[in-house]
Image (cartoon, rainbow, N blue to C red; front, side, top):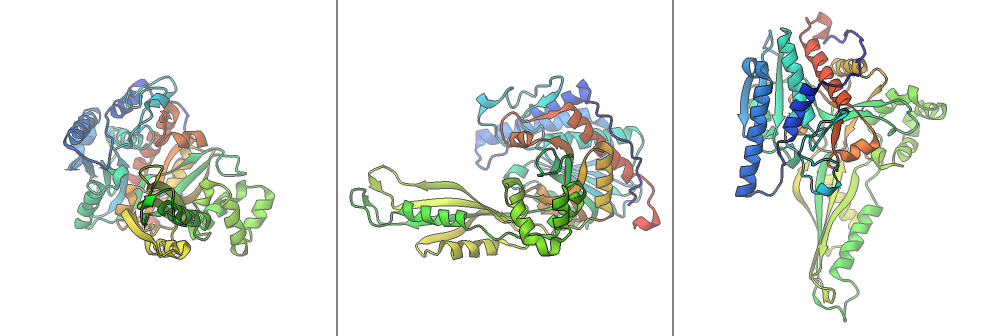
Length: 466
């Protein structure tokens, strides 16, 4: 794969009104994924996805005339045949669904109004993840208009239920690709971005191209006790026993560990760090415990070196003067490569040390991805990133959350989770929070990134790239 692309920096110009409006129309489609279902909710959701699909087909006529489209429910799998379709160059993922917006009063503009002003495009999905769906299609439409065709086949897979585990979207599309024997050189999905002011002591923006993702598991702790009147309690109520178990898990997290991906990430960032930390990283092999403790100082970086523990739900009791007979808590773990779902359960039992607390796995779970090492395809994504964001330091990392990529983990040689959206810590809080928005400049950079990727995939192949 060639990485000898023209190092022409992005202009930094915002998208024009028509391009911004195409994204805004997509944001007005209320494609909210919810785990609970019902006839009315399903009908409303179907209608929203139907409107979104019609908008995509109207807005990108060349794509829908020249690429093959298969639908899996509301998920959309596009096949862009290469001049040599015996190989698959890339599998580009994005998702059309969004999370709910419950705190309507906390939004500057209604979350599904799709407001466009001089600087921003506002609405749920502006970052996560409709902007990537539309940006990929904008870039493909432009490439087709210019007569470009990929050297090897490219797939575009746009799921409709990523926010609720992707079981009827990504899972089905991935299964279809396996049936065809597809093995892509590159998988590209959401995950990493360009951050400002988040990596301590690094004063330039940091573009983190993720090479895998953590696993996840939710563990339920439940306690059953004899009820009664609160005036004559025993030494331990169900809630007290449960609270002690939750406290033990929170106070005794799983061990810190520096993985190879994090070592690579720090090596790439070393030139941008103060002299003292540069010297420390020069002894990374022996200084790994110290490095891990430094990274564990903030939640954003602790997730890189630990399987994290997050108590998220607790229930118990019916009245202030009645001893509860049942109490339960949910604890969510995001699992570092090298740990597993089974090791999380073993840790819970070992740490709680109470046979009266029942511990079980609930809901969906996933093992950490196997991950990939940087190689020519990573270099390609890094080169394009430097073109559209020349001010950024490019490094690697792990996605702390879950993406549709996990369903395709065996279908690509190199996996990258990244979009060149430049964000601050405050911007990150908008994702799944209030006032989600994307600047016109960020959206232009995202489209240009995909345009350059498609241009690279259309270049003649060199012998050394095989």
